[in-house]
Length: 192
Image (cartoon, rainbow, N blue to C red; front, side, top):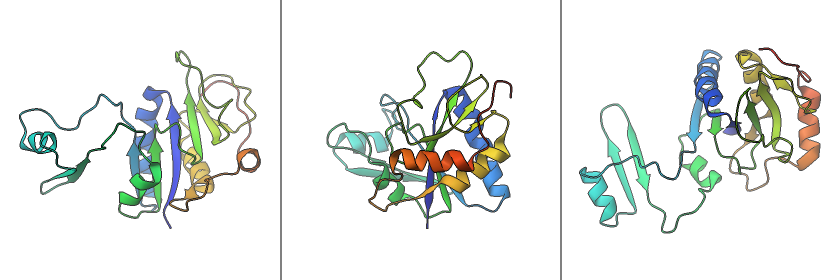
């Protein structure tokens, strides 16, 4: 059964933490994939390439492949927020998928809140956020981890990841958040 857990928040923090988590899970023998939300302005193809011309001509999907990797570029008929379960179903089954940057997904997630960030954190309004990764003092009523506590964050993720593709909400609101809080290490105050 494939399970998923989200990571949202500070981009600098995600860029550092997600690769460290992947390495940690791999060292533990946990098969892991990632699903990353990118800005709508990002195009993985570029004008002048044959694959770009094929997409512009109307191909629904273009698969590009070489001896090392492949990618599928799939066009939506209308701009829409990607359906997370549809995307997860396209992945080769693994033990765990880290979902990066999908704020609206119902899957449990942690939020990275770092000193100096210029956007309002989501955790006060989003019951799917079960923990924080932070280097500032936070009174959130949630488990809090320092950015360098990678082993502990990995253990928390494994304990709280949900099965994918069930068609059911991944959590049941406050009861789910409360159970995760009871399993977590408690609030932390500042520092790393």
